[in-house]
Length: 169
Image (cartoon, rainbow, N blue to C red; front, side, top):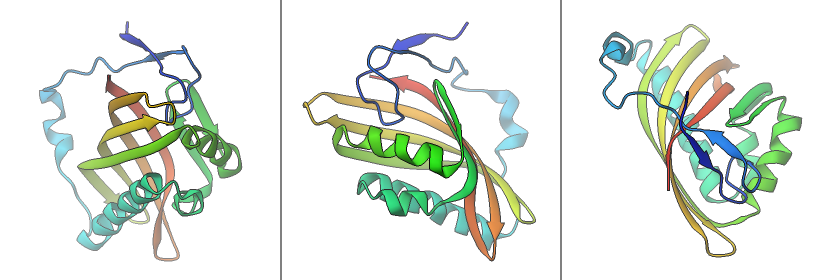
């Protein structure tokens, strides 16, 4: 059974006050992942995917919804603890509502492996979030994204992002 935390009001990912969310019980040193920790595929594609994640994080920090939404395919899926939303028209309003509760968001990613296969790819990212709600409450969250990407007309987009909370304070 996964450990649980009580979500703080208006978390970035849209959980409601007091909702129970799952926290990963993934081992910190998972030696079974050694083979999967190698990135592969064309360097220019892996760099473009890094720039996609940087664009996403920059939009979050600036509370720029239009820039955030531009990183996604229209039929993409965004999965966060307690939510699985498909279609930008469904998850973009949830993101805007969640962001409206914060006066500051620090959002920083560290790359895991990125594996490119033609016009599709998969990547793992470790996310550090420093959040300050408008009421002054502060939260620090460490999370993990498992992403699927698709390249359309020479540009990479998120097709699916699955977010797991690894630690929350």
